[in-house]
Length: 141
Image 1 (tube, helix red, strand yellow):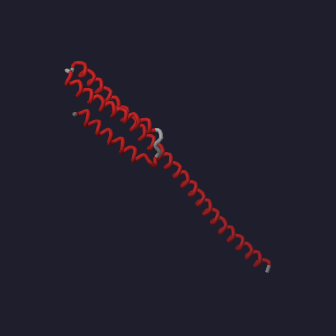
Image 2 (cartoon, helix red, strand yellow):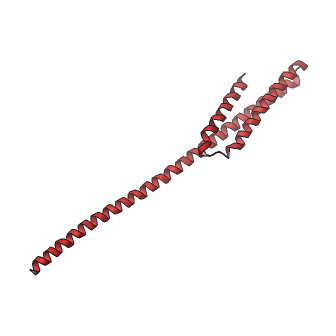
């Protein structure tokens, strides 16, 4: 009888250790998976932030390039004003005022760039892209 009790006890102990170790392993796997998911989410958030910042820097460079092109065109118009007749001066002055207005509008966009968040970024970027296309067309004419 002692042998049977000892055998049953050993079997119960072995079974409980087996089931306990399986559940601990499953629990450890679940914890590792949860930690990995958390790390992946953090990485994804960092990447999104990096992409946003990269897009912001690219747009800043585009705006600065547009301002530089407008400055050069304004200088060309100033040269035309100096050598123009009285009738032509009025036309060149009007053109200069238009260019200066576009330049101010771009500078305002550059100032607003720092206030933009990811939530309102696409609308802002589209607006700046439209301005840049208009300026490009104006400079080519």
